[in-house]
Length: 200
Image 1: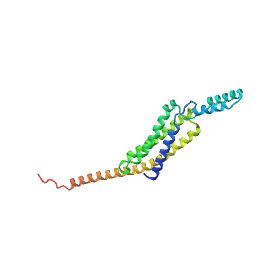
Image 2: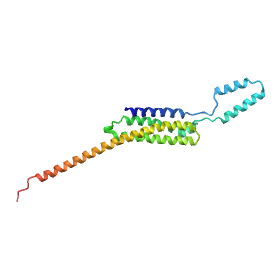
Image 3: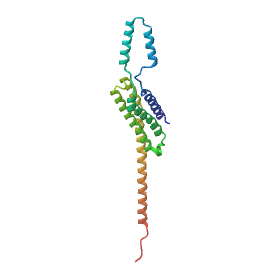
Image 4: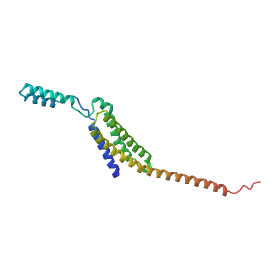
């Protein structure tokens, strides 16, 4: 794997790991450790008025706590697809790099196009999740940066390999045209140089 493609592969893998981490399903339920800490805090209070105050504060905290992330519903709607897209980006980067350029440049370019399409789609999902307040602006920014790192590197790869592919295609067409010209030239020469029919 060439150095730039190796770096792109690493960036794609990093994007997949981050996507898997931030699309984990969060629960609205209070954990056992949270409950234990609450009971312990209340047990240490002597005055019933303090107990009531602490309970009110805790209820308010639980009710208003902003938990960023995917519920089961939003995971099924967006998160699962986002994981698949990120996984396919990794697969397509490696698949493109494994194509022998001289003989499989068309397949290679198609796979790079698939990487670019996957990045565009993942960016769209991130925007939707931000709009629906599933993720914060901060998380959206980090995630978007990871996607655009892959996208820009893949776009540069596409541009470079696209130019090389056009040269191969042009050279092939020129060689075909030259071959056809030589065949026509040879046929004309045979007709012109053939002995004339002397029969009367």
